[in-house]
Length: 128
Image (cartoon, rainbow, N blue to C red; front, side):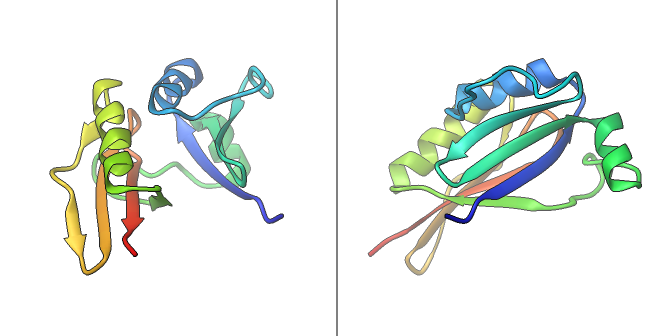
C-alpha cells in the first residue's frame, strides 16, 4: 500500500493536534519527539505536524508566511457532499476559517478552510 505523508509547520503542537482531532483525524500515539506529532487522516494518509523551527531545520529554508502567501492547498476526497460540509464546519467550530460556501464544478463538489496556522485545505466529493 502506498502511504502519503503531509508535513506542515505549526506554532503549537498541542493546539494544532486538538484542532485536527476536532475535525476527525486520529492519533494512536503522543508526540513523536518534542518537535513533531503524527495524526491519521485515512488508512493511507498521515499528517505530520512539526514545530516551525523543526520544519525549518528539516527543509533548510524559512517557513512561508501564510498570512500573505500559500505554500500548498491540501485536497482530500470525502465520501459525500454532506461529509465535505461536515468536515469544513467542524474545522470552523474548532477555530479554523471556512472559505465560503461549497462550489460545484461539473460532478465535483468542493469546499475549503484554513487551519489555525493558515494552511489551506479543500475537501472534495466526485459525484457518480
